[in-house]
Length: 204
Image (cartoon, rainbow, N blue to C red; front, side, top):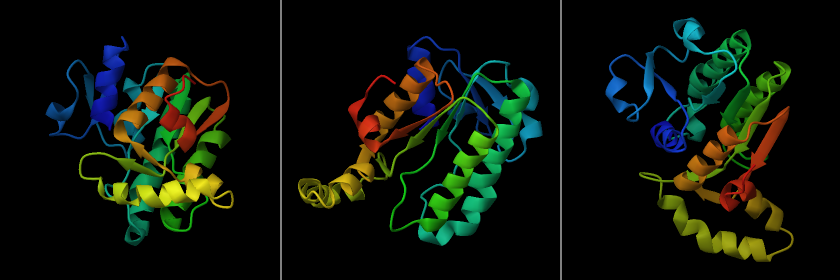
């Protein structure tokens, strides 16, 4: 998602700096400035974050599943803790965080960690946009599309309509658009963007 977002932001005229691991420099989108560092060690990139910039946090365990609770705390949680510390020190203008839709009946460890990430951002007093997708459809992540008929039926039922919309599927294109729109229109205070807004492509 980061590579796609960087390309879209560059297309929109933004200057983008990407944090990458050593050896992954070539994976950055064309036109990006590159900082080699470790998302789990804020000191490895702290000096490269410009004052007043927009900071987009996209770090997380690949292919989340209920079996990865320890990984969520070791990677997702530590990376957001470090990012917020760096963002505060740099006096950034706007922080963007991809959380997850909640409450939900599954993925409790993942939701708990992402909710903790949201709390860390709020406690830091940062102006922030928090996006809450449920499942993002894209390359290698298409199987939930088979659930669309179930979602359709749930949206017809008044008793399940709200849950179906809040936990709806979004495409990677919709996510990239929502993230880019958040960059274009910074929040004042903490703003939460739920699935219906992500899917609509609304200008924030």
